Length: 497
Image (tube, rainbow, N blue to C red; front, side, top):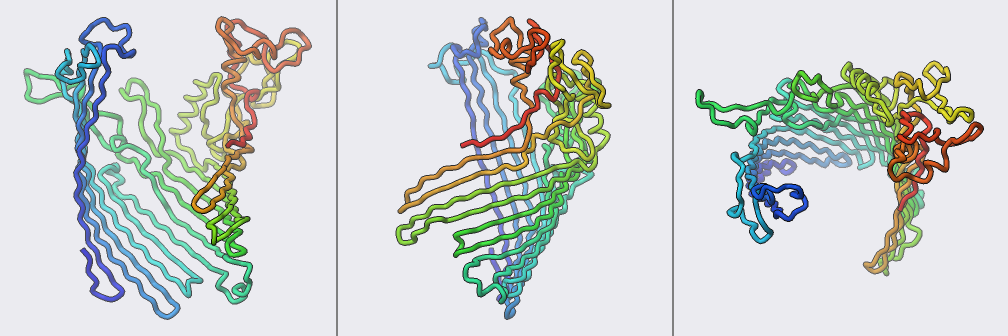
């Protein structure tokens, strides 16, 4: 429904209602390999059928106002939306199907005692207010305010407010640039604002219950049993990111050459992670908002059209885009320090995440290695204090940041040619400047068990006798049990079609 009380004002109201029904069937006869080894005919072959129903309704109220006053253009928009989603799924599991011709539930020998399923209802409400102003479409400013509320959020943080604002200057419309015929575009812009992502399942912020294991008859009561689905956190917040973006857009020779350069800085608060719990609690993990992370970097796009024939609808384009990003942890919580302690105790032959303020989350934390000692065939390591030791005294406490899996630059190169509706395209990916921990090399060569088939490098590149300058430690028939060291941190430079 639409109503225009004034020339520049428009009001709209909309109501939507939808219902969708689906079904899913999965049948496997007794001859399926999943039942190899089973002799009970009532368990060989299975059929799982489920039905689902989703009902959605929503109300949207919108108001928009646009006004042109000579060289001034003003816009304003407001919107409110209310939604509800109700979902229900149920099904059953039957076993005992002798062959693939008897693929109906009626032929099953053994039925699950209970019908399983799930029921959920979620409601949300949101408001959006946006506005903008432009003078001669040369100088522009806009803003956006948003407030979202949802039943899926924790009860202590029902609302998620976000906002953004931006400036834009089309310098090509200035008199001192308008006469440069070769220049097509010259635009400067800047934006700042906040965005958010939920990043967690509804049951992680609420106490959801399941009846699947305890839906049994209780002769002394008219109730039934249930158990909590997961350890929840009512204080769980949205992951929020503060974004600063500065951009430059250039075009030349009637847009046959274009370039876009952007600088960004993003600070993410309330990062969500799963914190390990003691076994006595009854749950393995617990969701928690922890830490603050900064990402900053550059994005670059260059495009050229070396050949263009409008009459024949013929074009040849070449595009290169790349990005450079660095990240740094600004704050870590006690939960993250606990994760560091747990990972230090579990560190073996593969690096594990470690969180330190001022460091990247993509750092590779291992013990520094000076290589294989030609005299003994053992690995020489460096402690945190710089003292040399052997691999026998490897200690996870000596792990330091050695490499970073984040590449210095990564992006794509693409070229395409089009002629009269026909086209050909070629592209490749590039990535360079980062490091990777070569887990395959340590598992299949260094720590290979000679009782099984092994890579030829297991014997060819090993230390065998005093004086050998080798890549790998001396042979141990049961594997060398080498722990995580910098010897297996390698540069990763990739050019891939």
